[in-house]
Length: 305
Length: 305
Image (cartoon, rainbow over all chains, first blue to last red; front, top):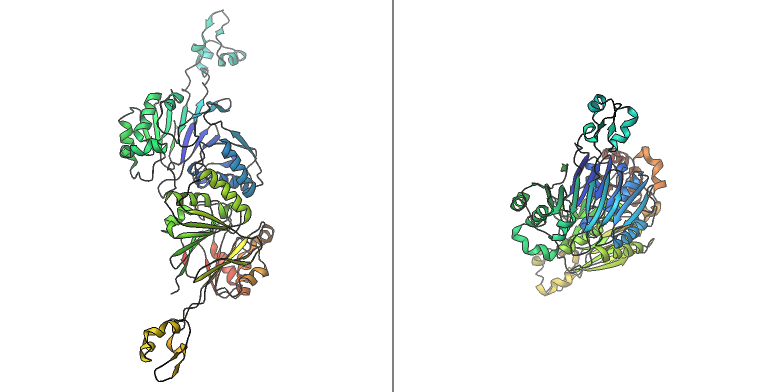
């Protein structure tokens, strides 16, 4: 199985309610945690779900509306109290970085970790983070204020070696590294053994895109084209469609259209208006537009994109 | 019964836990709500307890530590979304007012209510709020940073008229107002009827003091001398007493000593360290110092001081 999970910490909108917390989710891959958005109360949900501050070093903030960011000062303060060390990088729009610095200067002057700010250029499309197995890039969303989406992509994995074929073709240990890197092999009799015989197909690379908050735009589908799993806000149902674009939001049906246009396999919807009492109606309306798998996010949900 | 209640919305310390929320309480009297401190998540607890934004117009912030203030931007934003009107006054230290203005300028530019700031002078002792039946005053606490306590005092109520005695002494309607204001009455035969015969003793005026966060200080007891009900932080138990003063906090025993010195009738303790697993130990240690009623605060508790 791919080592890539998404934890939903909050998938409500605007104001926290008894049913849904404001936006926050955590990507867990290869022992690292990456947080996307941080609504009020996220720190409590983070610990309730057994996640570890020691593994969280990157936080991505889509935009400066309270339901996506108000939990951040408390999370960082609690991480400081919990003796968090190393570095924490907050990827955030310019005015967010200024504000967070102002807040931290008053409320949390001393952190054992180094708090770094990576300024997201509003409207920009580029890589924000990269390690040997993952890239995180940003792309524009279309909301009432500057808002950025995030794409998490595993790098194309290497083809794993086949122990049985290495033995069969009597491949010496010294040759294995180059085969793992993609080379063919010439055996003792001078025969060329193609790399594909010595390795097997890897698990397909995971890709996951986060689009919240945004109105429905063809440009969003282009930005996430080919993504395997798409999280797209679905604030409203069909009956409330008249509110969606005016408020910079989408209906579940519009989210599904973006998933279809992007060629996604799996759509996860969230950011429900507090007027939505039954998310299965949203799933139903989305299913009329999109034939892939559809999941309605809820707090505590963990899924593999 | 006096029309005066205290709602505990949070009585933990430092970081929110599954057991306790950070500091927040609401005084309810004569149809008005007054909030003291506003830790992260207070807006949710406020609505969970069925309190109404429309009745909340004054918020008092003791000091600028996150567990006392991080819920404020979210509360104000949600009040704005709920079409709150009129005025909301935040009574807060100078650097808190500056920071809150910075936060609101980014996260919540439009509020249907007028957001006013009343700057609390650190170290000052004076009246912050007054209406016809209540005064709220501030006094200094002794914490790691500037911190202010709050005293809520009902004004001395008028003596209620006794309908039976008004009838017996044949008091005309026109004379009742002056009797209600304290005058004696001279009847048709020229006899002086003392005011005390025509009225009865009122309920005693309620007074309630909030002392969190603070180390134990004789000056605090003097500031709240004669208070009927004292809320005093009790972060630690006896075994942790060595931490208390150094961190600007108190033990339950120290809170009880302040209650005794102040001549209070009722002590409510709270602001428990997350290391406290059983608050009854705090109550027991407090009872060794203070003979009055002792209550351990918990979320959802409503009491009449």
